[in-house]
Length: 620
Image (cartoon, rainbow, N blue to C red):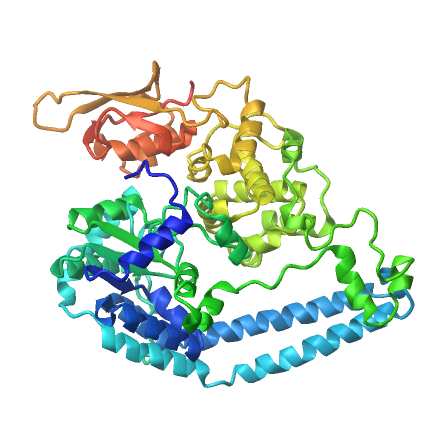
């Protein structure tokens, strides 16, 4: 189950193509896929409906919880608001770029007479009609029509059955899953405790607590699949959260055919192994996930009848730019000045320039030599804008830092150089170490989407962030803290996607006395929990030691209160009962032990009696 390698994309699609046509396969819509359909144009929805009818509409279902969440989005007018936000983002970017171009543009910038004026004129004549059309589009009825069409679709395929059976004991189940990082729903743990704000009127929808939504959806799917004796279930979803997906294989399953068809293909949507096991325990032999991209590939293989759906799902990137010289020549040639620009005839190619078949900037091989410890120092020289951004991040309060990070997505960071990315990782680690929630979320997001990032971005960010967890600004080795951020980063430490960064940090720690060093690879950390039966033979066994090899990671006489388990776990000042898993988690934070490599000799759910003064042994 957990030892399976990445599935080849072609094999996945062939298996999917056969299974969706089978009588005992049932397909279930997640809210995210329904929202994707609502945003798509009518031709795209019509082709999907046609395919659905072709393979058997009766086997498609909308769980009640997915319908409930879609209804909330309908009341909030989410589809129209998201389009308006995207249009505004484009308008702001176009206006800001024009402001900058106005400053830079001159004949010297492009190398021939009147080129600056021509470029600004070309830019304005291209952008203005697009801005006007986007304003017009925001007044379109398409948004409401799409939402209405999907609402009617939901009514036609809504599952029946009492909701109270699904939500029975949901709160307890959710807490256990979130605590144990058991799918689904642990990625939504932050949604607990939603409430009405003072600004909301009585007629407005309350945001509510939706931390258990995925779990309700999953329970409902399993209940229905069991009732109809489904041998295979397929969940159609537009999400890519790792409480549904197994993301560790990255893009290893992608084939050349997929890469040729799609500019930026997503990894094969492999379900989390624990979800596959849970479905199997209900008698469901196979569980697959299907997102819009792979659904587009699937329908494209069915023929020309599904061309609109395939194009909507697959053609989501602008065409690649040709090589620098040919792109400029094409533009300049329209003004009859190619000879002036290149110092010769229009047919000549600048020496050393690559054309369309050449290496594009994002494909330039990554050089691990940039991962130097010196680059972890705050004194490293950075571009002015980057320096200003990092200074703002370091000095901002919680709200302002969250706002800055909202505007720094991974696509923007792809344009930063190696030193800037390393410095960003270091700065973010410092903020996360102090408990900043936005920084913690950003680093957790990095962990989840690492395989999809370029090699330079993921290696440099990881080097900066993990390096800052081990080294102070003067490159002396830092004492470990109780912050969870180091564990988040160590979740990746043995993956090939960040092997250069991990090795570079490990080399810098060669002389340090650590229980685990980055770059060591996938080595089992065998931990032995030592207990002593309670004197009355009724209470929980007394905790004596937690050892890694011959090293005791705890002490039963910790005189520094901040390091006592009672303080770290919020249990007061007396002896208390705790499960082994909670204690191991604290120890892993202090001793920087990758959780995925830890092997414990007893069940981590087992509870023990923790002595009053027991705590983490920090002097190892």
